[in-house]
Amino acid sequence: MPDSPVIQTFELSKQFREVRAVDRVSIAVERGQVFGFLGPNGSGKTTTIGMLMGIITPTAGSFALFGASDAKGHLAARARVGATLETPNFYPYMSGRDNLRVAATIKDVGSDRIDECLEIVGLAGRGRHRFRTYSLGMKQRLALAATMLNDPELVILDEPANGLDPQGMKEVRDIIRILADRGKTIFLSSHLLWEVERMCTHVAIVRKGQVMKVGTVAEIVSEQVRALVRVEDTGALEAALADYPDATGVQTTDEGTVVSLKSDDLAGLNRYLAARGIYVSHLARHQQTLEDAFIELTQGDYGSMTEIAS
Image (cartoon, rainbow, N blue to C red):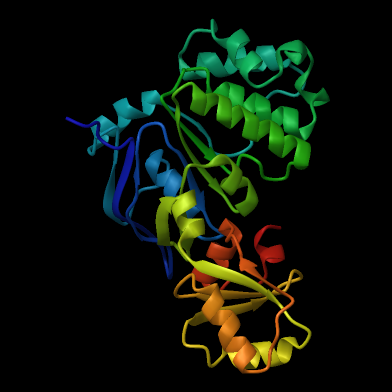
């Protein structure tokens, strides 16, 4: 008999007065997945995690952790979970190692894993240094070490790379890969699309509290056939594409004009344009990114991608 999903939600919802922060979310996270819960700030990601961790009470719907769906089962299941929900309140005057000792006491687990956890996050050489001397990236990595103290089967991370510079993001990404290689199931929320695409095996794209699409990253980014077209007169190209029956969308980018198509008949598109007197200097299959998929699914509800990823 196959294992139950590590996380499963059934039309999970949360209403805050007039605001429906989470709206009938149904997802399943299987053992061993690195599952990205992707959406802009305010899309219900943190609220969903809060319900899974017992911090927020659902308005409607339900969820299961490791197959347990009642309050008693949730309590037992959470002993198998490690979570970083916000910046931890570490003591600035204490060393990283001593802060982990305090965290281990609070979690009611032994301190024998402290050295291993510091090694995993790359802080073995800085464990005796005071927390206040740590960079933002080091502080985030110490938070990940604290998350790992109870050797959890499921790791839940809320915006783990938020506010970090590129090097800090890479360090967090490398840690997540190490944990995945050790068989951990990882559920992380993020609004950083490029990071999710690099880290995750599966993703749910959420908008205004609703799940718009769920699948593997590869499925989502390869679902739509897209072509990159370059011509001298982009206005004439866009006018011609408006009448092309196989075109489902047109987007102007710095690279050229990206056309979403119903099929991969690029030769047919070339013939059509040539018949209209439009001769292309470049026509090739264009690989969709998670950012492209996100824009298509949200239909511009959240403005530009600069705003989304800020």
